[in-house]
Image 1 (cartoon, rainbow, N blue to C red):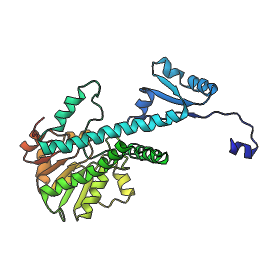
Image 2: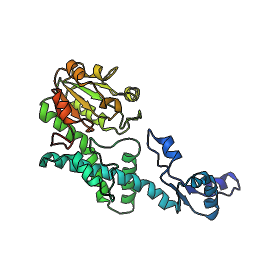
Image 3: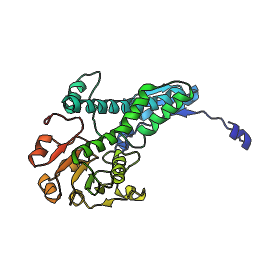
Image 4: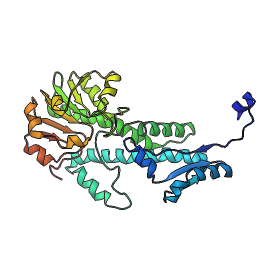
Length: 306
């Protein structure tokens, strides 16, 4: 209003908050078939305008939830913080599974069958990334500190996520020893499949840590290699999975692209210099991979079969 007054413009307006809940790689489908539409308004007029705007969605039984503006903003942050917390919790459980001899995939199926918990966002791995979860958890933590509230659970969610790629590096070193001079094939750069986004990707952290230790990294990703190049990530970019694995001492699967689930393991092993396969997304059956002569390591899978 102050800016309009400075310009001498006499306009009537309302402020509404309409946070989006779109997943990268599924944005169009999420927009057309939303679980819910959250709208924060400060007046009846704003509510009427937004109701007319979203009428086609209500006619198709997509719920529109009206609330005040601060609550709408908090809903966005709280939703992403909740999902991030589930991921960090499962990674913490996965790390414990390795110590006690349990299998995180079995645990996931067991707890996910509880209708109060459900199956989504219970997958362990090398941590979350992307444009939303890291940014929104940090933003919510910043707001909480501004108002003098200590969100200890959220702080732990963030710290677990930051540690997860480093634990993956520790696992590699514990099995392979000094990685200096050794060649690593990285399959997957994007923080998740079906996107070229490498922002806050755990794969980039792992690559940087390997390079610090003197390792040689060659990588393949179906979509994200151009972004990685443009970001100055100095590694060898390859034509496909087998090109990346040529002469490698270990393959690291860091993004769960569907094409990586269907690798020709005989061909992969044939082009490698050694037989380590580190599955950072638990997409393989350890039993099958080991039958091909690989030394397989996943995340939270002390038991060798699912």
